[in-house]
Length: 369
Image (cartoon, rainbow, N blue to C red):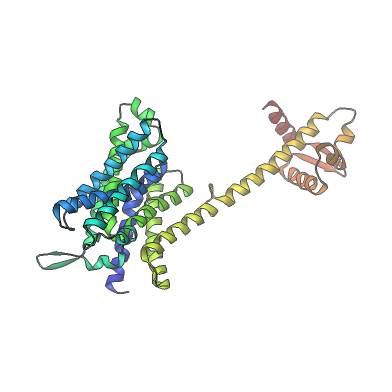
């Protein structure tokens, strides 16, 4: 691999890890759309700051974009609190207006600078290694790597310091308020982290990949674990895998790096959605099938229990009678009897079925409720 290839992958991994940390709390708080809103709405902050400084390298662009992100969150909450619209509708109202205004300003007054809409939406990670961080004539590497490394460190420090508060506010904001915490302050700190991260990743990877890396890896991790610390780590790891896998997919297809990384992130989520041990589609289907067989065995146990020691017990306990009484077809009845025998609920003597002690216990528990 060449040095630029290594640097591109390093930048992508750092961006993915930085996005996954605040993204985990967005996913848990069901605010995934907020990352989309912030990543688009901050453009107007960048544009307005550029009009003031007329310097694309000015740190004021980051400050302006971060403040715009916080303003976006405030406007969404303001609209939501009016009770006229729900939160998703408020997001859908606020960010298109801000983003469209920024696009109009770029087209009208900044058409000859790098703030073109293609770069904004798609980014161009392949160009990131050419923007170097040079100090006293020493080339220290890509500027984006240092910028996103600093943002990753900031996210780790803030989340580490406010871990208890973020966890409590995320899972039970009412309890957090009752215990003396201030959920609104924690909320705006989290949104500020999202804004800073989106702004930092904006130029290198574009707004679409920011959203993909902020939501898809944490959503994948959410399907694989119930523990918040593990989810944070898995989200960052999944983002890194998507970044590296996406880079080589783009290399193989000769296609957009950002688009390929977003595609791999989506494929990883799809794989987790299908094969996750507890929350995957296949695991859920197997669980439903197991519950269906267990319910049928319980029904068989209740049937035998209700007719034990009665004059018609000999008839009701016959295998060929189950089809008539329980409306089971012969193949299904044979499967239920076989599974109930293996589970130790019944004994079979020819066509006659009798409950075991375990079968009587299961029937009594089911009847008692």
